[in-house]
Each structure stands twice: as C-alpha cells, then as structure tokens.
Length: 230
Length: 230
DNA sequence: TCAAAAGTGTTCTTATTACACCCATGG
DNA sequence: CCATGGGTGTAATAAGAACACTTTTGA
Image (cartoon, rainbow over all chains, first blue to last red; front, side):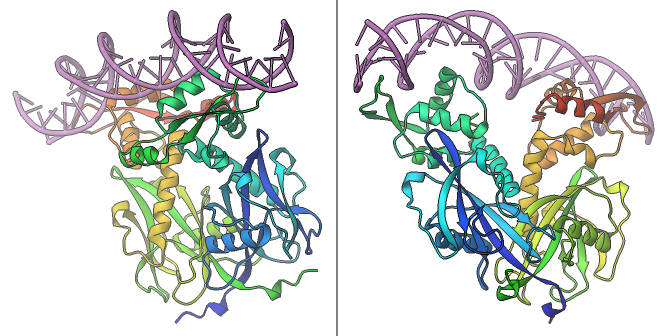
C-alpha cells in the first residue's frame, strides 16, 4: 500500500464568491477577517477544509459558518495555489461561486468573520490574499453561464419586472441592451409567466410582474434545447 | 503569525488531460501506472506536487516527467477532492488540460509510467481513480472553448485541408456539419492562409492546403472581436 | 473507367439590429 | 400638469440551414 506520508502535504482551504443583486447592482459577499493574516481586512468567506469532507461540502459548511448562508448550489471556480499566496506558508485554496437573492438571506457574524457585507463589484480591489483574482475568475464564469442558462432568476425576487431582468443582464454582461429587442427575445423563450399583478406605489406607470417558469424551462431542456438568452 | 500546523494537511497531486487528434479521431494521452494503487492500470499522467511550485508548474513538470511532453499551454479543469477518491488516503488533485498535435511529440516512458499511449476518447472507462470523471469535465471545457477560440489548429499539422479541419470540429463537438456551410463560414473569418500546395499521392482529387493565420487572428482579437466559429 | 474525396452557389428561413412615441401613475 | 419609467411594432440587414452535382486524382 502506498504510504502517502512520503509526499508533501499542504493546507487546503475553500473560498466562496457569492453574487447577489441589489439596488440595480451586482454585488459580492465579503467578510471582515478577525484572524491573522490580513486581520480586519475584507476577504471572501473561506476557511480550512476538514477531513472526510468533499471540497464542495467544505465550501458549503464554511459559507454557513462565516455568513449564515445555507442551502445554496455552488459551482467550482478552480484552484489557486501560488506558493506565496498565503503569507504563513503553503496553502492551496479551492474556490466556488453561487448567485443568490440578497433578500432571501440574513447575514450573520461568526468567530471567523466579524461581519459579512455585500460589496459592489467595483470595490473588490484590496481584498486579502489573491481574492481579487478569484473574484474576477468567478465573474467571468458567471458571465459565460448566464448567456446559456437562466441563472439570473436566482438573483431576483420571485416576482419581477422585465426592466429588472434587463438591468440584471446588463449588469452581469456589462453591456447595454435595447428594451424592445430584449423583451421580444426573452418572452419568445417561453420561460416566463406573466402574472396578474403589477408594481404598486411607484411614481410612474406600474410594471407588469413576471415569474420564472421553471417547469417549462425543464421541459424545454429535456427536449434538448439550448437557452442562449443573449 | 498564524500557525498553519493546527490545520489539516493533505496530499495534493496534479493530473493532465492532453488531447490529440489522429486518424480523424480525438484521443487522450494515458499512462500505464507502475505504482500502487491501480498498478498496471491506465490513468491520466499525474503525480504529486512539490514545495515552492505553482500548481500549473507542477502539472507541466509532471507531464514532462511521465510522458516526455514539454512546453505546452495548460488550462485548469478544476479540483477533485472526494474523501475516498484515493484508496490510500486523502488526496486532492488539481487537473489541467491541453491540446497538442500528436506528431509534434515523442512519448517517453518513465519510472512512474511504464508507457504512455494515445487512447480513443470512447475507451476512457476503467481508468484509475476518478480519472474518467476528470476526462469528461475536460472534454466539456474543450467543447465550449473551441466554439469561441481557434484552438483546433493546435491539434492539426501546420498545413491542413479544410476537410481535416471540419472533421476535427465534428469530432470535438460531436455533431455533423454541412461541408459547404462550414467552408463558407470558416473562410469568411479571415484566419486561414490558402497555400499554393495541395495534398500529394492521394487516390482522389487532392485537397488544397491551408495554414492558420495567427497574426491576423491576433489583430482581429485586439480589435475586440469574438471568433464564434460555430 | 471506377472509386473516393474535393470543390462549389443559390434559395429560403430565421434571427438581429435600429429606432421613437404614447401610456399610466404618484406627487 | 409634470416627471418618471412602462410598454409597444416595423422595416432592413445579416446569419443560418438545406441541398446535389462536377472535378481531379490514383489505382
């Protein structure tokens, strides 16, 4: 039997890039570190893995422990293992990302994180470690994914206006879209349910509200269909 | 200063999924293992990382040591760290992939690998560890990448016929393409140079040969252009 | 002269782009 | 009655899909 002790062993951590959408802006969840190194600096919610724990399970556990967020689907960003990325020694991290509706979760402090906060994507410079690089790679993956999968709906409340949806796409893809063309295209996909409800108490014509037709999307998927929203 | 010795340390390996193209078929490079576990079984070329070595550098070194292949560009597939993926204990692996022209490299045996061999993609079941899963994920990434970047040319000799190029796209994307439409589309991109040469000694009308116009592609890229081949 | 792959255009259908005005509401 | 964002259609252009026969070569 192979003796693994002959080989280099390193510390492995997991980090999470959680995207949310609020006030018409894409945000990312950061924690304020309470531990050395980078004490009191902003960082991605991450920590060490435990034994007998799959990497994605470690990421879920750490996310819950540092921010209170539970039950989210995580997708892998990749591994980051530059020899000096951690000032205390060799640490390889495996990063995950997800997108959530900010209003669905209440952020909690923890022993590891003094506080968790949603930060604008424009303000992710000066993060601890190589976390800015990790954020950027996650954002790139998010951009590619939203073009072919209806993941944007996870960032919105269950009932939303077409304008909110358009702003969401514009924020993530960093482009401007034509209102009429966007509506035509998204409605033709048959993955939205037009509700009876409209916005209330807005100082302009209230927008019709829609919800995501998950059932129909899954039916379309099953019949071998690629979304290709934009 | 944080003492990393308080935390779990695990063995980290790197594995490589090297794609090649030969006899009109997409292949992947495998080694026959000479070490326990999975002795004498086929596996991806991989091994343990060293200290003070970035992950991608480890992957390059290991690839050279196990197969003799050097100087290739590696892209990360991701990390795989299920607790029982290695029978001897906890081992997290970071996988990379690349595509090369088979004829450009001579495969060499090594102490770790009795021999290296190109295997058809259809024959990657029964690999050691979770290497089949890793191959599948790498193949998915390759499929997506070839749609938007001209990486296919790396799999072909410097001079190739349009039919070879079409077969290459068909193999990777696992679809059939219309000959006329494919030619129209690829020629319109302005990334091919039509050579004076033709095939020789073929028992049918010889095909014109083309080469990849890298300079022009880079110029197009710089002017903010997305390839979108298919 | 046969077999095998190379090479070549047109038509039809579908998707994409560009663009400007009236509507409903709260203040 | 004003400000604000909601909602709507058409025409022009570009891209994609479908399709079959002739050509060149070696054997």
